[in-house]
Length: 76
Image 1 (spheres, rainbow, N blue to C red):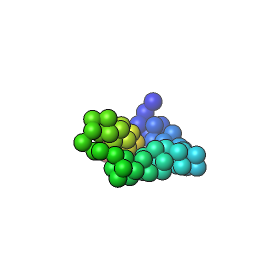
Image 2 (image 1 turned 90 degrees about the horizontal axis):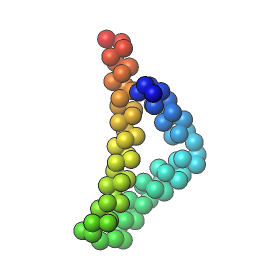
Image 3 (image 1 turned 180 degrees about the horizontal axis):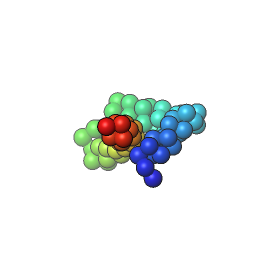
Image 4 (image 1 turned 90 degrees about the vertical axis):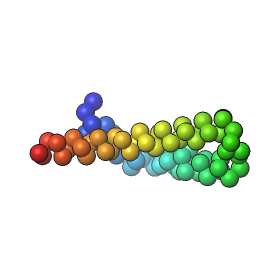
C-alpha cells in the first residue's frame, strides 16, 4: 500500500464517528488524561499504557506525513 493510499484510508477512519468517539476521544484523549491524573505515572504499567497511546498517535501522524512527503516528491 502506498503512503497516499494509507493516508486515504486514515482520512476515512478520521471521518468515521465511531472511530472518533472510541479511538481518538476515549482511548487516546480521555484515557491519557485519566491515567495521568488518577494513576501513579512512575509505575511501569502506567508508562506502558501511555507509550501505547503515544505509539498509535505517532503512527497516525506518520501516515499523514509520509503521504505529504510522497506528494511533494512526485511534484518535484
